[in-house]
Length: 125
Image (cartoon, rainbow, N blue to C red; front, side, top):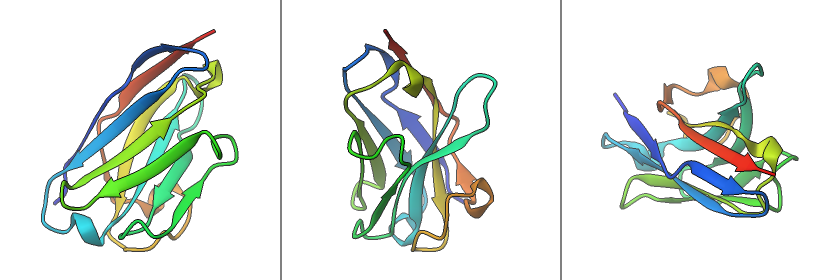
């Protein structure tokens, strides 16, 4: 069993930055692909970014590519999402997710086995 706890959300002005963290429990974190999703009010949960088990490959949604960076520290069992150049349309609850397969297999929510409780990111214009 894996538990994921997100932190780092908050309110920021457009153009600002935030760094989200997702701390994981369990011994197998270093073997999992990890991802961030987000869900805005009234919208479906959508893929944001993913990273494979060793950080060697990363993947991004078109809407965030060039502004967001996903990374991980397996020694700390933590995955990060650095968000720069934030826009009001980035406002959402951000969720961390873990896939027990080490490599990224796709953006579908059903590919991920464990989820955190989410952290709110609000960007004012």
